[in-house]
Image 1 (cartoon, helix red, strand yellow):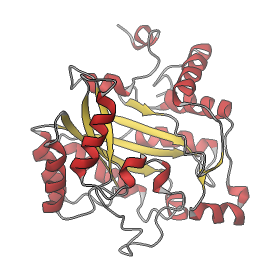
Image 2 (cartoon, helix red, strand yellow):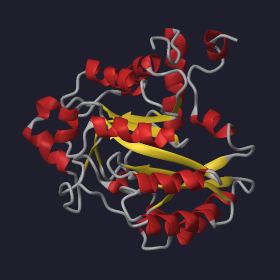
Image 3 (cartoon, one colour):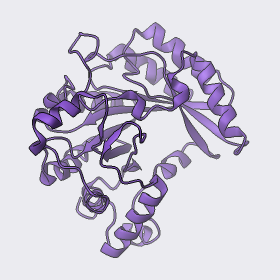
Length: 311
């Protein structure tokens, strides 16, 4: 069956398709805050963190409490199991840099998560400059016994952008980390922010071309959002000409153009994010994720678009 015939039913590979390769039942991610920081926060590489980052914009409320990994996961399981009693779970180490510690501490935290009832794997969000060979040894060991997805925050493939947003790593480091992790047989994902300051539409679409060369399994992306209590607010006030905040229709077409250039073997985990109302400055679309995905799929059908068409 050709890609075209298959994609008459589905125009891009969804994250649920990826999970079905590993699990005969439905799984749900539960976010965990394990108390990590980042090397661009604690002074090892920089101070203040990424200029766009307010961790409260993407971490569920229950992860803000000083609870153990076990308590956070049990709370999440209790919440979801009321409606979905047969659901299983992935512990999603989400807040800050979740490999930024010594191996013994990481092992203890990961194994604690895996000991919680109905937790069947780990999703670990980290930076490309925070995965030593010793850490990859640990993840390779765990991957032989359980599901592991290692998610790298790339954000951009342009070093000028990475410097402006205070990432304190280069794209070359991202490429190296992804290749080293994939060589261990690990599932590797990448996260990008579309529309970072100073990036043109051509720059953004080139991200798709560049990451398509890498041994990735999943891709997550979302639109640039300006949130309160971030250094990016000051950057916007000082250089507003560097910023463009998409309308929802502009962004849908951008996502389609991006997806048509992406490697057709990748699974597209996310296209959009919505910060809490009390933190979001712009763009405020007021659109739920499910509504956005419906609009995206409808527009792909109208355009005759599918993942990898221009790959």
